[in-house]
Length: 131
Picture: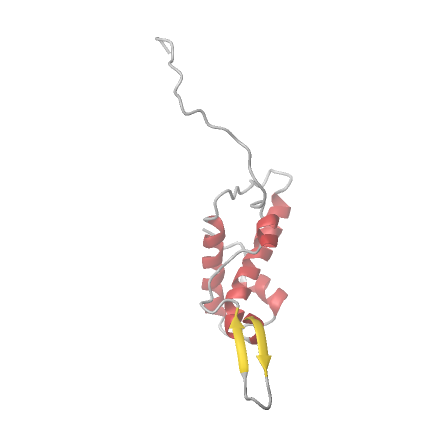
């Protein structure tokens, strides 16, 4: 499977990366993660929405990898506090294990948000003989 984003796509959004080989592997892993999402339907090139979907897949793939890579930086913290006289500090890490995850905005961009309506018929319909 071809990854949804390239190293150039990532670097054009977030700047140069030191380990390009690791980034290449993470982009492939993130693409596989996105492909495994229930309800994702990839469009074919003839479909009018194909270009928009490809652009969203590229952006979301880069975002997923960026969140995983920034888990060790200050950007990965959801809360940080510090005191002076009492020597107190507190930190909450948003993604300490560098997991991949999709935000609500990512899911919306990929068409994975919102409910789906459908029905199933639990009973089989007997077929007339000869069919």
